[in-house]
Image (cartoon, rainbow, N blue to C red; front, side, top):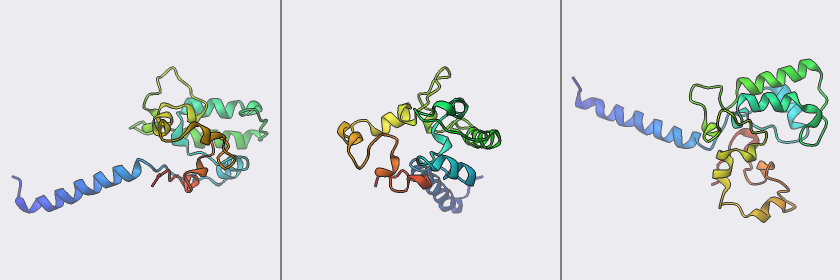
Length: 158
């Protein structure tokens, strides 16, 4: 039997669930591994693993001899450690799949976060195309130019 005194508890639980979902929509887990932060962050912001599926991280780390036009030299142990961390925390590593998996078909292996359907949806119509080549932004991969706390996983636009 349902008791009327349980309504405030139910209402509070629903409120907390709703607010945590809306906040979580713009936030990702920060990189918690020092080696990943150090090695990936030496040349660019270390991107949160939840932004690509496992197969994408596997391919990216597997081809460091041509890492977006650069040669990245890592010893085998470091490379394996980074690959494991990225794949263990990838967009498709959880039971729910994550928002970056929305629109990515099983046959797709995106190599750029900026080419995922989620990223495109979030930026389409919001960001003028000339902004990407501005001296302050330089490229679509420079998240921190607009999202000041992106390196901590916070991509809130407000």
